[in-house]
Length: 204
Length: 204
Image 1 (cartoon, rainbow over the protein chains, first blue to last red):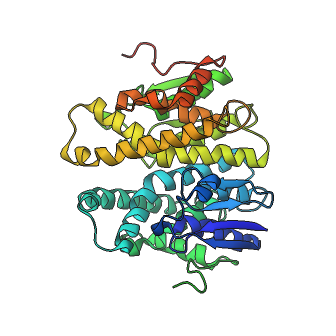
Image 2: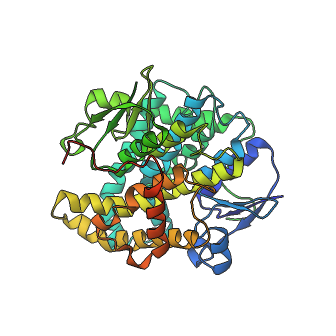
């Protein structure tokens, strides 16, 4: 059975959980306490030398890291990854946008606030992170004024990648009030059959 | 003909130039002066609403952004992208690693130094950026102790993505002396037939 090394607070971990829900695939979830260094143990670093969750372990023991590479792998051959070459590349474009321009602002600030009091270094970076996060949301709002989805004519892994941290942006203090098209798209994603919430049953 | 919106100092722009060299494909290069705001004009934002180079414009006028999505698009069907599903996903894993864990440290510090005197905010972030850059190089060194290439059994777009900023890491003050396997891999990449240097003819 597929095994997912995951953390219940992580949007990056939620991405494959959400896709696996849509695909109706069983998997074993292994909780990794990242704040206690469990993603930096020698055993974990054999699975991902970069020391981050999520990691997907296949039935044959091979491991795959990076949330969006996992999404791509799982989605191949399904309706969540376009088969047409340019649409597939645009799906990847939005997934790289997510990891470069969106996650380092919106997810990182959410994680800082989750940990409690900000350090001085974090406080110094906060204005730039806020500006970067809102810039990413504005790019999404502009796209969603013209199109319903990010990667194609229906929901793809680009939507799943962007949904993960956008739907909890408020936990990082990002007010979505100025982004009505983003809010409507969040509702569309959550209304898709097979949707599963981010919260993991049995973990508060 | 393909058109590449590019900047001659950018490793992200160099990635598609290097791949196009290997593929032997003609293209028109359009220099975009990012420091003068030329990637934020209304005309450019129609090509990439995220206001960044590189952008690949196809013969039919369609545009594709994000350097690594461009690499994936151009490489499909060639020897630079594995056809086997897991090898293709591992290629993407390293490309997402490059954009999340490598470029924001190594390329960003190089860009700061290129612009001249650091701002106070940049100076405050420098220790963390140095640490992050060396962590990324250590992950690469570990991988290259076991394998010759990042995405498969021969050079792929993962190697091209990682080469772009690793081979100029010294310009960001990152000493590669402690990474002999990385240096040997840089030599392997540069020795591949079809290799083109980063410097653009006619631009200093």
